[in-house]
Length: 196
Length: 207
Image 1: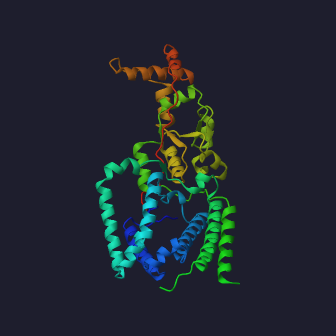
Image 2: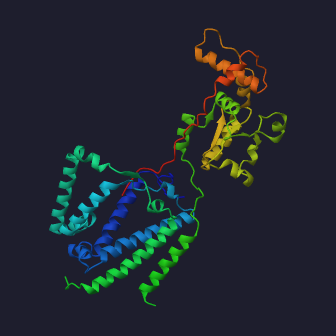
Image 3: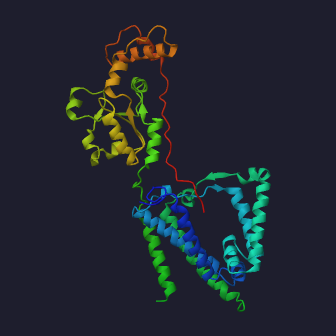
């Protein structure tokens, strides 16, 4: 049955509408979970607050299990679900830049929009920085292109690389996520932060 | 039980189940109308009689001829080594291993092309990938391979070469062709060209 748009069960135009609704819901939940607080976000790097880790891994585990069970029940054809292609070098370098920006600025791109929406000035500055970065990247693209496109691995999945079934990988991800949650709560107790 | 433990237990339980069930490889997917139209327009499903003759003469082991006509017609005449899957039985369980596999190249034929195209359309809609249609069917096969007619003398070289090949093929298949051109059949021993069909792809998009 699914995915709905590629199967032409609903029209292409609905894509934007659904993205809009999901986007608003996403922003709302981010704000509700306290993701508009940069101290809370940076807490994951210092160990006093692991809510980022918990929220993102919970989302990943939920989405992963949902897709696998939907596929099991024939509700979705996973071959038609977009997998982001992997460019190894840009993934590594981009990850480092993003992580550094996360620690320095206290936001990741999505949460900065969220925080800017409730009027936080530091988030607006952060957003400005994002656009400067995008502009600079665009201007220097010819120079960066060979690095950006290097080590193209295609639309690979971790399960293919490791040579195990998607279900087995899902199980290990769940176990790893639970172990991390446990470790994170341990760290929260170990490095407590005064109320903010 | 503490809610955390309960949640963890549920997650691990779901994980164990999904780890042990076999991955779902059935394809509920059907081609969209526009994808099918594209394939039909490019004619990727077509195999010409000359291509088929070449493969049969070279005894390509990956060719599986499938006669789509009724058993009656099949008994009266069929191509060598063809199997009979009448259109009405196309969806029977017993043929699924033949029609949906990744090894053999199935070539559907009927008298014309209507039946074979219908069969191809249905199997293609089901997502099967290895089925092709003999262009022009048996009628055109008889006309071009079994009883080739000579081109006019002013025809371009490749027309003449094609004719020579067809004469040779005609001999090979025991048609009404003459004997003179028999040797040229052997000289044309090119490898069968397997047409690459366009792979179904996930639509572009991203996060």
